[in-house]
Length: 315
Figure 1 (tube, rainbow, N blue to C red):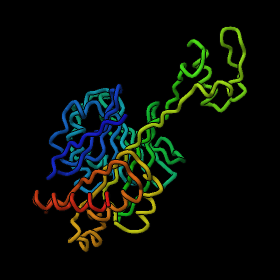
Figure 2 (figure 1 turned 90 degrees about the vertical axis):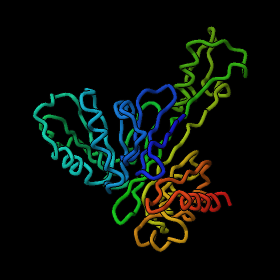
Figure 3 (figure 1 turned 180 degrees about the vertical axis):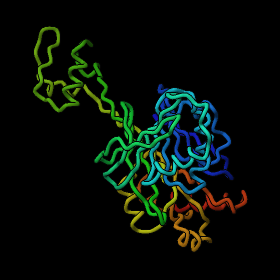
């Protein structure tokens, strides 16, 4: 289960921290100037997901870097094409004569297209950027708990939207039969996962075909969480959003402008309250949360914006 927390105040640039139950590593989405992002949050971060490198989404990376120096582990950075050079440029703004080799390593994953990712490594003290691999798939990160898919949206530049999808789990319900538990349960689950209906399962000396025991199994669908930041509210972007985020459990989505400022939204390739709420409704998202509001708004303006979003989302 995903446990997201918005680490930025309403008048700060956006930053979202994602945790999982019974899972130590954390995951950071966007590097806005989040005052509630702690040193521990930064040091426990295994992956940082960046939609694009406009200043309001990348400005706080220096602080995260500061807290991660010395943790002696590898951290993954995911973002659009060009993020490796921009990361190295940030690094080169500082002097590194006192840092030790091995204090931190970064793997940078650049999203070149919907199915091409370039991998780089960079580490102190020289911080030399070296290309290590090219991946041909739409999964930017995965572990034994979840996978992260993505799509590239138009914000006058590429802006990456991320979908976190928890792995489905298979559980056994012994009350559906008359068997006692044992090592055969693991073998049955493996046969189910690998689609081996005729695999032999032996229970107390009796042989069964795995397909004859599949009725004992239940598939629990994994949770899903989306993070959709800056994008133009146009048909092409909306089509991509619907293709990836339909029926998602929870989505944080940019709602930069109020409806009365729709022209600003369209000219600046930002979404606005009504458009973001409407696309979330069309996607059938269970829990859609508007975030990342223009800093020109006062608190009462943001309240109006959120109300416009909710009306479009729930209507």
